[in-house]
Image (cartoon, rainbow, N blue to C red):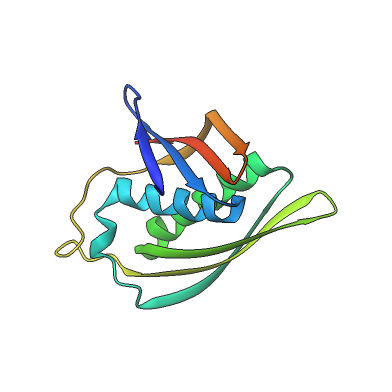
Length: 140
């Protein structure tokens, strides 16, 4: 299982899973785009590199998802595949990611919900043996 949509009154509350933190961040991004459209309709035609950094893992998750929202808002691009590598360099957490997607086409990408922002409210990073779960809320 890559992600679940959890019960929440107005916004999208998501739990994304992975064997590693890298994979959980990848699935968090996929879940966010699934909130916006059917990700099966997104073609991985463009490959880009995205770098993000923060002072802790929570801020890193926030900055990661927020940077993808900005790419959609500014460049009108949707993404469907992600390869994340997280580094801790002297207590500065960094992501170097490859992302694949395409330009938004309203004829092929059915709109679901407009994602306005990521929030820190109820954000969690849970580690269990062999699994990482990241939970976050998207402001719709």
